[in-house]
Image 1 (cartoon, rainbow, N blue to C red):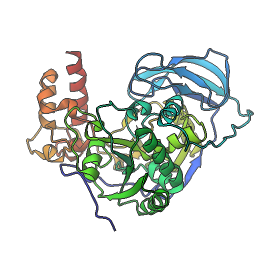
Image 2: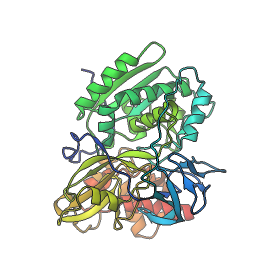
Image 3: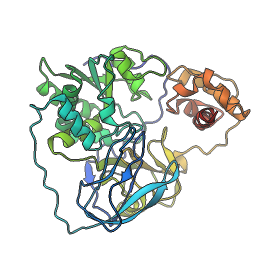
Image 4: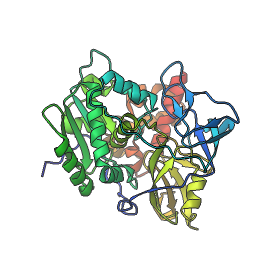
Length: 440
């Protein structure tokens, strides 16, 4: 057994809550009658629509593009007719521009054709990744083709695949590694060809022993002197799956403040993103569907669902038999970094990892109080920042003065808010501070 690694500073141990769905195989949800595809699903410039109302589209056809700035194209998740070009509910922005497709359930299924990528150049593979609209599935949605094309002066020698899945409840990556280990590992090999590196390590927390075994078996059979892929078990600690923490845990390298991982010779990709890259390159399939964990005590049937991007939460609820009477809160994403929603018409995007239906005993609705200066948030912060000071300054209407306390280095993991005995909404204070400081 390999020694378990972790990052040295901070972190917390929230209840895992993964038992509801960890043993549930990925289930393909039937395509609903309508899909609402949000145009801004990635960091950067939102897509410009390339279709018109009443146009007929086929599954996988391009419906949006980014001509200028950072971005990736957008594709139709199913065949049908463009019903509307307007706006949809959004978990963070209230509403966002979108395209609605009325699905044609009688359309012929797309037949995949396997391609041999082994003779392709890294440049050609990178083009395929871009054309397929691949973004970071497990994080903020950074365009993958940009991440895989780092500055020339940043010499990359290590690829890290993130299979930590450290957020409570979520098991989508766990099931991907169990059921599609070959796709994940071959996706890693494709990424290695693009980057020109020979070493890849796959970090998986030790609470997923079946995934560790499955991935280790495939990685061992796939590895060679030119393609060294191995699994690295990790301690169970949140936020183990954060880029900078994962890099420090596995490689010992520390990414400088405000710098990218490529500055220390590392590129990090989520395991599900690697699988999407495999599909894009080998089967020429764009990213228009993904695995989403549906969990919590407030949903009648928990599941790991393969859903089309643009599927509304209300359609998921209906498919799974509705909600239970004790439902108190619905969260898109994990309980640590996700966003509460009040509108079930919100559609799934490429970055939606889970939808949680939580009951009263699964949430803490205690009102927050003043900071008691205990310092627990300082101990919990994996970045060594000062969350308590940021909160105090925001409450004093001095958000623009929080930069010295590291507000722009915070990736909003929520460790500080989780550990705070005064129940202070420290992540919300950080977000508000960032917004106001940027306006200044």
